[in-house]
Length: 250
Image (cartoon, rainbow, N blue to C red; front, side, top):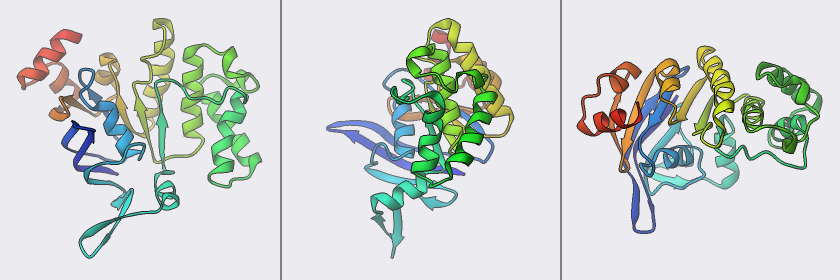
């Protein structure tokens, strides 16, 4: 479903992604792990066009996300065309990014109505279903300030789901949470993985990666160092750098 080919990305003189390539199949959960500064979050931001890549290709269902090909050359699409192509990609950030002046339910229906042009009644009904799924049906009329960190993140997941995306990108979704809130978010994500939602998850939660991922990617210094099943990467890594990282976090 998602294919990344030789993607390079720099910030000034600093090369952050160095020819990163991998694929994610429909229904697959892929966890990306690695030390801080290894480029994990930048990969997600490039997939979702929050960052513009310097070179390489990113496709969703065999269609380039931000370009079209013209006689072998890549031509950048207009912003509206890009937005139309990435509407099938959901994103859950570290910091929730909920609208503070809107209720929980209003947060969920804003994008389906404003971006996709859905009827408010349809977006509202589906939004309530997703709130029920994440265990927050009773918080529909609450404001974000009234919620715990774990509840805010579950609302953020429900908001992403209410756009009915083909895949969701998770950027360290539990890193801003208190320890007691982490498990409630991970349980929702495990449910989504078991349900067959396509997910790319940047995470430091090795237990989640071991239990929920189909494959684990280890990154270091802007490169993919090793890819394998959770057991291969977390129990029997072959690369010396992967071995050192796993030993430090487990």
